[in-house]
Length: 255
Image (spheres, one colour):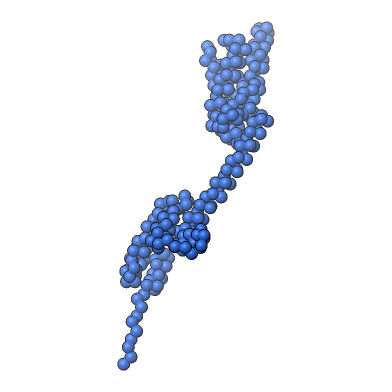
């Protein structure tokens, strides 16, 4: 009996040695950059085992490396905290080796970056920051230029600045207005929303009424709608706008 217990302990120790801090290189979401993992598996099935310790350890190591790679390939190498959490939870799940009887085990892992991979991550982050800065500056320049050229006067000014004699033959008024109209339709991405589209529609609708009585009627309808929607503050502001569209009284002639 003592010999049997000693044999089983030796079998368990041999399996433990084969599953303690074995290494694995795991892929990341960035080609060419990988994680370095040291995995330790814990077997929860008591000996005797249906196969030799070396064979069982090799099968478990292969399974765990594949399991870790399945989740690591979606992880950002610049975010070690996330890969540690995700991979840790994934390897902590109980697994069964397909033997007869099956062998139950789970694992934990220490994950880091080797020096070369860390250098590659630093280079990549620096390049991304430079690109993000360049993109932000370009977007700002585009937005600024588009706002400027939405004004016909700005279009004409730019045209004059580019003429050798400064005041040559100016372009036709309709050409200037067409150019300005094109830029006036430009909207930055942050303004390409339904709310901004609705505001643009309301502006066009209000601008379509030119006569003061028409404008007054529109604001009266707007105020009434706001009252109906139980928005008294907005209704009061709409009613205040009515004063700006009061018809100008004709001067009375003296008698």
